[in-house]
Image (cartoon, rainbow, N blue to C red; front, side, top):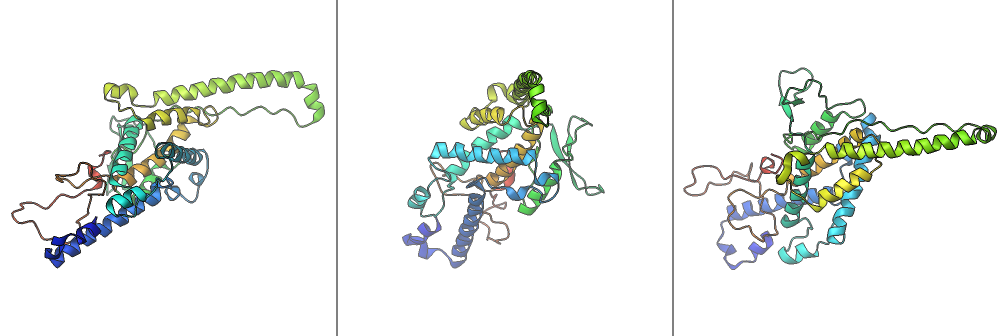
Length: 331
């Protein structure tokens, strides 16, 4: 957008300090959008996972990886390819980027609805400088003393805190999802170690396989029911916002190794990816407050003024509000 301003006949009348501030705002916005493009182009959040320990591998991370591939497929189906071609954004506004304001806000709407569908609003952050263990902890507002977000295989709290601190993001107020009951998978029985035993026990093994198949189907249906119950669909009622993303996500989750992977583990792994995406979208999808003319605007109108020492507007009684994370959907 700044390049278009420079080509205007009246731009020569703009003072040097104002030009510098405009250019700075433009460059800062471009850097922020490009950082979001790098994340959202492949929904790449490998760095959100701890490099060592059980969280570096395992069922939760595998579930997040399958969800990442699902998101790419979902948006490629809508846009023909993902990320979508840059030509439209470049031709319209002169900016070499595909994540336009329009697309960022569409994705924010999609993932905001998914957040509302899955979030556990009873869980909040508790901050304490005097606590010896850690400054931030997740607690239950209703006083559920048995709640613990962390398990031996997934240090949930540390993962989110380290990601937010590294990216300098404020924590999303409700950082934890509704989780299904834990349904451990059934380990298939051994069929023996020799051909002689296989021949001898053929009939028994056939019966065992039939029973195993029945158990697998039961486990799959239990997992699907658990996923359905671990949502806010009943609480939201008529306020529930239906979307193609939620509809496809529900189908995906119920078919993604249901009955094989513990749904409790899988939902938590998927949520970590969703949390990262929500944080990225919050950095680019919020418009500066009090912008009057923003209908059909595809370029980003979320400049950051912090640290610019911008001169105040004549007659203004308060600092100009700017686009910040806390104005995003999750807040």
